Amino acid sequence: MSPRLTVATAGRVLRQVRNDPRTVALLILVPCVLLGLIAWMFNGTPVLNRTGPLLLGVFPLIVMFLVTSVTTLRERQSGTLERLMATPINKADIVLGYALAFGLLAVVQALVVIAVTVWVYGMEVAGDLWVVVLVAVLDAILGTALGLAGSALARTEFQAVQLMPVLILPQLVTAGLMMPRAAMPQALEWLSRGMPLTYGLEALQQLAAGATLGDVLGAISAVVAFIVGALLLGTLTLRRRTA
Amino acid sequence: MRNSEQPAVRAEGLRIVRGGGRHGVVVIDGMDLEVPPGQVVGLLGPSGSGKTTLMRAIVGGQSDVTGTLEVLGLPAGHPDLRRRVGYVTQSPSVYADLSVIDNLRYFGRLIGASQEDATRALADVDMTRMADRRVGVLSGGERSRASLAVALLGSPDLLVLDEPTVGLDPVLRRDLWNLFHRLSRSGTSLLVSSHVMDEAQRCDRLLLLREGVLLADGTLPELLERTGAADAEGAFLTLIESMDTPMDKEPVR
Image 1 (cartoon, rainbow over the protein chains, first blue to last red):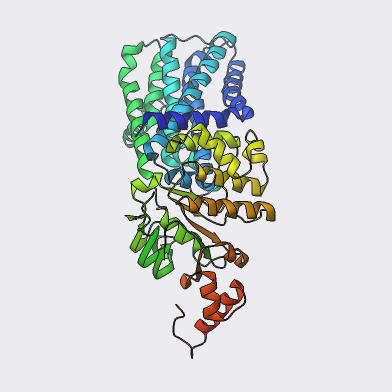
Image 2 (image 1 turned 180 degrees about the vertical axis):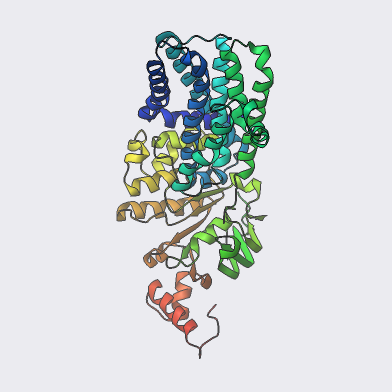
């Protein structure tokens, strides 16, 4: 592994993204628009203050997951991955390079979306706002990490698109968005504890209710652990030799 | 100079299965082969003959390779070879959403090539004027040249080129073959595949491949003398016919 090659790869990915301004605009605008719709729909109720922070964690995760799955699939199909594998670059440099590039993108996305939600839509977060930013960014990086790990499963465009409903939707169902986790059947509650998204949303829920960094440190550590695990899995499933 | 004693590629009892798992297809079954160093060796054969599979195995990108396969004296796929072997896949493998020069800069960083290397590689494929163009807007031939330029970055000891001249105009094709010979004179070994038999006359040495079997290994004059044919295409046909006729089973090599 070499930090120089990781940074070179991140720089390359960012340059590709910069050459596609429409994607950047979509990445940042879509979550803003969705939150705007909710703010508008529940105008005059405290719904935005309660669910807004949760959605700040969910939208970036989904968007980053999709972007990463598609990008890595393209890398496989264009033959550039095969070419990379014939160079001295370490597999971890590729995975970390992607995580770094999309992580930076996630920071920009989270800052813009949260700024708009707070200052334009008037969302009030009872807890520490900067911790909300932190969790939103970590969730977005988690989306990238899961996309990198999941892309090993996808061989075609159709499969890549299906990965989202397969890997992300069950997490949304069990993460406590639809029903408090405490009220779930025991087995589902246990299942939800094994899902990466659960912890980010738990932290955001608590932050919406007035928690500080110390209260959500455990949940944040769990998100970080899942990120590391997914990146490791993404590295291990990259193959220098293919059939 | 470089170690000129060692063969660039040596295979013994090479067997390659493509596709993996239960659906795997044996593409090459028991091939012996030696590519001498510092020469332009043409790997000729029709599409589906196993050229790409053999090349993928040589650069270490192919799984299910058994038997002996040595590249520059090391087992194929050895980490030390990643700096010494350049590989150009058949379809251009460069990033379509980056400019030509950005592609060269990125791959150059990976192998420790300099800005001068990038400038030289661009000139080698006659793309200096197009450096800032995005690969996505280039023609097919221009993309292949951009892809080739990436492989020329690090001055590798062995260049494995999968059909690098397909779809190029005759002038450029001639220029590229001249470049290949210039590289080989400076000590680089080249393995160049093609399904166009005309390109045989451009190679120092030929490997004729059909259905995973090596039909011939030698220079073009040797081949023509052995088969009595007038050109490579004729020699290829004679070899296939002699193999297909049950009366005449003895190998031509």
